[in-house]
Image (cartoon, rainbow, N blue to C red):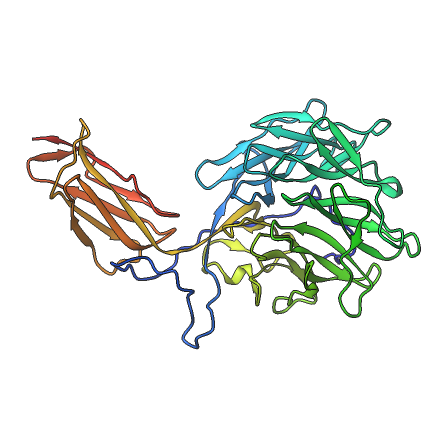
Amino acid sequence: MKQTTYPARRRVFPAIVISYVILAGLVLTGTASSQVRKSASGIPAPPQYQIFDIGIVAVGDTASQGFGVSPGGVAVGRSVRTGGAQAFTWTTGGGIAGLPNIAGRAFCVSNAANDTGAVVGTCAASLFGTSRLPVIWQNGVVSQLPLPSGETLGDANDVNASGVAVGSVDGGSLQQAVFYSGPNTTVITQTTANGCFFNTAFGVNDSGRIVGTGIDPNNAARNVGMVFDIGQSSAFEVGALPGANGALAFGIGNGGHVVGSSMMNQGSGLPFIWTQAGGMAAIPLPAGTTQGSARAVNTAGRAVGTASSAFAIPFLYDGSATHRLADLIPPGTGWDLSTNTSSSALGISDNNVIVGTGVFNGAVHAYAMVPVAVNVSVGGRVLTSGGAGIRNALVTISGGNLPAPVTVQTGNFGSYNFTGLQSGTTYTVTVGAKRYVILQPSRVVTPQANVTDFDFIAEPQ
């Protein structure tokens, strides 16, 4: 695994692994509990996840990669083919959707999305960013973000709820951090008190705080984790962990948490989380690793990243403990998130959906890991084709983690509801009613959250 010593650009090709996870549990018949699960020892149990293969955009694509996820759960990345790459979005309800490339650039990647239809990224002439241009997709329509006068290169790495995007222009020693707002692109020229300046902006939150990496003119070997608030006259550093002298800041959440990696000069780094009030704190490395970097953080301060020793180890930090993602999904899924150098975790939403890259049955694919929740519900109505509810119909649910089928009667308006179910698990719902023929009496459902409209239509015999 390559050491985390330089600002790893999201456009660099990573490998991705995806898997499905179904958990065993018991369906209850009361109100859903909100208590935190605990192990037999009383210690909070690790979170449990399903893992979904985001897939590829077009038949014949050779791989896909996941680069981020919006606060509301819109995943982004790219699907790679011979001679090109296509950006995409993905949601749990809609699956993968390819985004158009900009004219003259065959390799595009979506790096970030907001929840109001904006996606930003980079289109280039090669997989590794040759002749790169910053782009934005607004509700699926692509356009180039404006470059400052005289500039011909740029990228876009993140976007907030207001549509303000951040990235950089130019390259090498001339690279400068920028933010894009409407028709304007602003180079971030503000420096820290000791003259450190921004060269790449990686993240922006909804309050307009930007994070990224900078250069110390007094020590070019030192990495500088930069923070800048739009409208302010200066920037500042996040600092360094004990024994280090600098950092790379990769992500910021709407709660103000900043995450990245801290190191001595260009040496290997250790993951950190920073807040305005508490400063920088180390994120514990997952077991069996010696270095790493946190890449994204949500509003609650949960962070994801990738650590390494011989292999790349994606991880989740839940605020107190660090978990290897490979340990949060069940065995036997076909996913490898621990014995390759391609796996990563680069995004986490506010509802804790994790997006990255892994190896699925030998293929590099983008994944989305969705938390498994117990105590979701499935309900709906049994109706005539005219919309009248059918009372006293028998509705039975079976499968999933149920030890035995459960049957209820519909109420006055034909309504039924099963509570205490487990998300990500497939159930069969069957309906019978005297003097009625159910048009589709048996159907399957795999709830990710509460389902309230699982209706059945009946006709009189």
